[in-house]
Image (cartoon, rainbow, N blue to C red):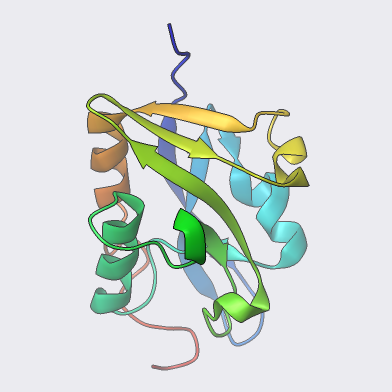
Length: 146
């Protein structure tokens, strides 16, 4: 039997260039992925901030209703808050979905800061509900004014 992880979101505030960014932080099994990894690289989650289209695009991508934003099925989960350009770097995982389970697999050393896990499994219904719950969480604007 596969051990399922719990996923939820917490509103966070990153204060830095180009201005304060409110975003939805991924909390997996009670652990903030922002605190564990992304804060060190000054990335924020791709959820809960930006325009309505930006938020819908990332929600759709993370529940696999649209294409991944990297080649070979990789999906960003934390990105640059100043420009959202993947060229600045990102924390990403492969996301797979079957009838009941969503799996995230990390393919580099970043998982060392996430309880040494390379793969997280989530209940599909709860995962989709939680990802959808981030829409509008931090408002509908970019910190750089777009």
